[in-house]
Length: 136
Image (cartoon, rainbow, N blue to C red; front, top):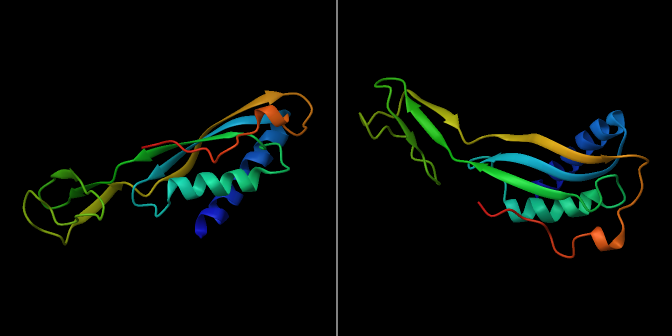
């Protein structure tokens, strides 16, 4: 499952930023995930929790924001939501040869929130008991 490699990459980047910023504990990581990015949000949340164990992110909340896929026809200029699976034939002129995907492939860290101070494990009461997920 590639969600684990994504979670580990996010944790690594956030750890680096948190260390440079003098963070004691990361409390929230907000991600933007495109509808066509091939990421299952619940699987990512589960993997994120595992990847955070023993790091400054332990106990951090993961908030995912889904970005709907949109395309634009280069021939007629019509833009439309592609849906999932994506419909890449222009509903305006029925062409599929000059279509540009505008949104839907995003996978980026939007914001990170942390507490200042010396790093240490999150108290047991602050650790989530179930994987954290954000419904789209």
